[in-house]
Image 1 (tube, rainbow, N blue to C red):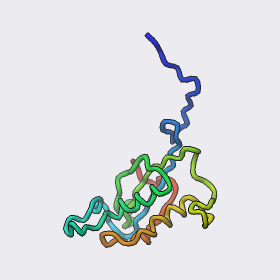
Image 2: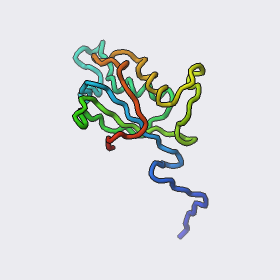
Image 3: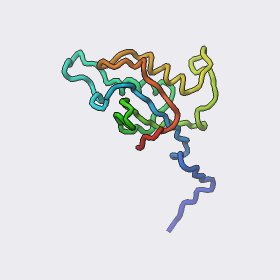
Image 4: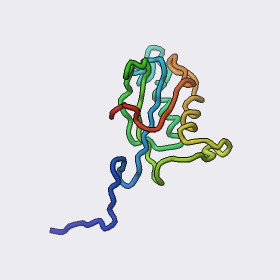
Length: 142
């Protein structure tokens, strides 16, 4: 029987997926339970308001590819917040340092992602201008 040997195969634990580094990001939606707002508001359809979580994820995709999306969790540790952990593909290694992501402002990747999300306005009564972001999973599991 023939075998296939990969001469240069490398596994980097623990955040490695098919040659791409995974970088984890936690998005916090403060003082709100958004776990029931994962789809379009069908009450006012067809003038329906989109999910604030979907809008936030779409903003992230302006700068990175989302590989994994965790389950939004409300009141984790009695915080009163909705927390969502995601994994982004980082083909050249983890997003680090400060650069001009939009060509004008020199900032960290995490600050740029937060600014992209916050610029999206209010959806289903939740103001995305209050969202915070952090690198890592911050206690949330996939």
